[in-house]
Image (cartoon, rainbow, N blue to C red; front, side, top):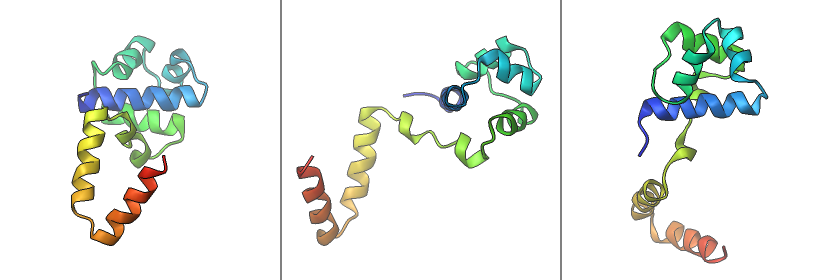
Length: 104
């Protein structure tokens, strides 16, 4: 299970790479040392609030986007969350989900 710091770093790296920015380029845009950005992306450091705002502006993403890292969940975490959701469904919805999953 990854820490929040690691998940934030992974998400920043993912978005940076999707934008085709190198660490050096993003660090230059943000005004920080590339080594500092590397430590942020590797989950060793949190960015300051000011640095996070500059990262968001440079990557053209919102706070909501940067903290959306649910897709980094482990298999065990995903199964646990799915089971929790399924246990709260009524029979009609559960049957519908069962049919969908059965077709995969």
